[in-house]
Length: 124
Image (tube, rainbow, N blue to C red):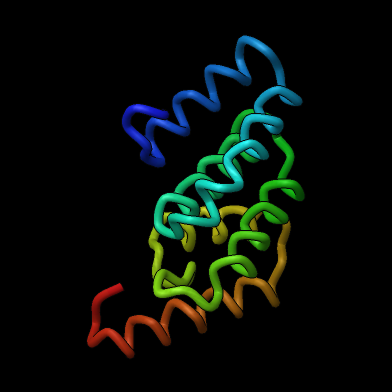
C-alpha cells in the first residue's frame, strides 16, 4: 500500500491484516491512515469504502459500516470529490440501507445520486 497507494491495495492489505491479526488490528490500521485520508480526498474515500466493505462483508457489522460511510460523507462533503458522485459509495450505502431497512437514508442517497446525474448532464 505504501508503494502503490490505491483503494485496491489498501483493501488487500486491510483484509490480510484482518485475517492474520484480527478485527482490532484491521481497525487500528484504518485509523493509522488518517493523514492519507485527509490529504488525498479521492484516495481517502476509497479507503473509507474499503473499510466499510470489510465491516459489512467480513465482520458482519452493518452499523459500523454505515457509521464509516457517514463519517466519509461528513468529511468529504465540502471537497471537490463529494461522496454522492462516487458509484462505489452509492452502491455500498444502498446495500447497507437495504440490510437495515433505512428508508430516510435511502431517500437521501437516491436524491443525491439523481441530483448529481442531472447536474453532470447524465453522467455520474
